[in-house]
Image (cartoon, rainbow, N blue to C red):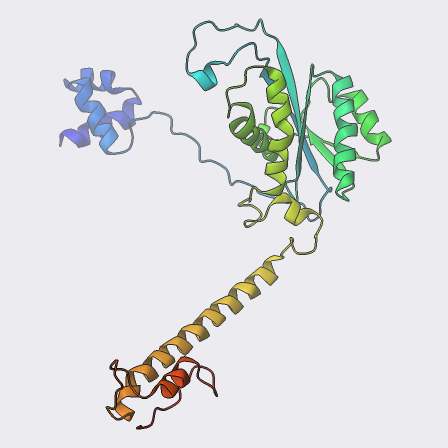
Length: 312
């Protein structure tokens, strides 16, 4: 009865626990507990989240995601690695800007550090990424970037000079460039904040090995366990299509099954073997003579079937 009265007052008054408690002569905590028990403790329910649209381009170079991450210069190891916030530089050290690019199809990533995020730095990075992907046999067809100040007219002109189409993300929607955002997060975790660098030059020197590990050795769940370099150029012995990988897995399971059956059949024959022999033993208690034992140790004839031991 009390709960029904609280729920009815909630539906009619559209007020919080305190107002409902005053109206019904109850404690606000009691009203809140009842509302929470029935799943209506919030006046405004959150709208249902829209369906996540995932996509992947069909070939390398069809779309390259580009983004920028601002990193503080290193005067001394910071709180992210030491855990001590005392003695911070408070922005006096300055900033460096990490430009990143990642191919939508293969996840082949590239990054470089610049002293600013001007259009000059962006154009220089564009030339570098075109050269990098070109070394792997990839022609960049489109680049996707946000609407930052360095990705305006001069950026579009430089892309046109390279024969690259320009694509922009939705305003205030970083999820549109989610692959680049995730790439940045991986670099921060495994490179920028992974070690206690004494100077920014050490961090810069560690960038190239981190990129090489990412592209060459780090498997991707989106690529079904392949690395970017295994998928990008169809290199002999490295790229495995999903259909071929499935066939290989089926063949391996069948081979293991046949091997298991063969082993169980041989074990059964060895168990039945004493039943078909006479109980003649030599000095050490083994069945048959030494010549018979050699026949048992290295049987000839059909694979997996031991020859019968006759009486001596």
